[in-house]
Image (cartoon, rainbow over all chains, first blue to last red; front, top):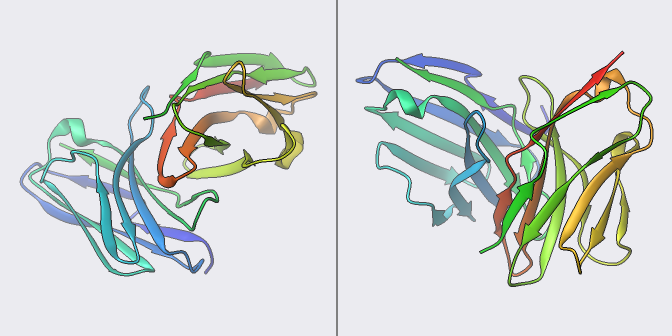
Length: 111
Length: 114
């Protein structure tokens, strides 16, 4: 499989649940990103990893916890989320000044 | 930090008509500029990018955009749209010295009607 993949594609969870989103890139890129896409709002950058090191954390609440075990895999661990966290979560990878390549996203619904 | 404004949230147009989706940016540093397209239930796909050189950039699916530094704009155009062009379009800007800091506009929903 090529490009950027994300699993699961859809996730419904309660506010007390713990779940994880997974992202995998097969492009040999050094940087990986998590974005949140909510209706009627610009894409929000959440986290950036370069060479497995976190380089950006845009004031994201601690109920979102990223993990990057290697340059090809990125996780987003979720716990005690709120209904307003319902959104499409997009993973992307990139290298240098070139564009970012996006996965299909995980549609998250928090009940 | 840079920011992006997409002036139209929705653009309805008839098939085979020309279309322009407007994008203005604000930045105190030199930037790279991008247009992405998002089809339903999919991630973002790059249409075109401006890094340097010619200010007229051609992309996939017959789209093109022109970088205008004096007007800080990067409008997207297509001379004749198809039904399949119906999608959400995002303009993005990144700092040349820190490409990790990419900012996106709120998006323009292009609807092509028969």
